[in-house]
Amino acid sequence: MPQRRRSPLLDKVVVSGAGQPQQRILDELRRVILDGQAPPGTAVPLAEVAEVFGVSQIPVREALKTLVSEGLLAHRPNGGYRVAQLTVRELREMYVVRESLEAAALAVAVHGASEDDREVAVAVNTALGQAVADDDALTFHRQSRNFHMALARPCGMHRLLHMLEVAWNVTEPVQPMLHVTTADRIRLQADHDEMLKAFLASDSAALLDLARRHAVQLNDVIATLPADAGLLTDENIFPLQ
Image (tube, helix red, strand yellow):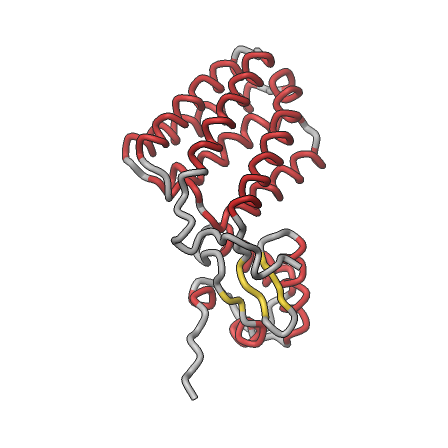
């Protein structure tokens, strides 16, 4: 009987000692997935995760159920857990959700931003520009999320921001900005620069218009992601629930 291959996720988790609490297990598994260290389709074996953390399967199962509810894992009865693999249509849908939530936040945030909020937005955009100059796709990917959240967070609508974070999390296993061209990242960064100017000027109309145009360009870029590289699936053969 061939030996089952160890899931690569198990090599990425950081365990400080045996007997980890459920919240710690949940946080660490979520971190690995959101960092892109467990690509879509990666197996998350219940028993092996429990062994790594030095706990029974009960807290691990509860942590995995939470990640399923967040859209980060998929579960199939008698088939175990895997990092969720979206269809092309589902990925596009999540970008529509993100665009709608972000627009609602920006309409308010631009008028509620403090000087500290503006400094954070400038700093993140500077980091984005440097990532483009260095052709550092990973940093660009991570800082792009930080930039959009920096513009949205001053809205102060915590439930909306939570929903935006959750919607963003669902797309994170794909790590989309790592798989687009340098030219695409340059174009997207030009949008960020213009959005920042409108944000700093407290021009909500201009910011919302720029955000809509950015979303259109982003959707065009996402459409170029390779559908045959294991990032996406043509059909939902492993449903989220």
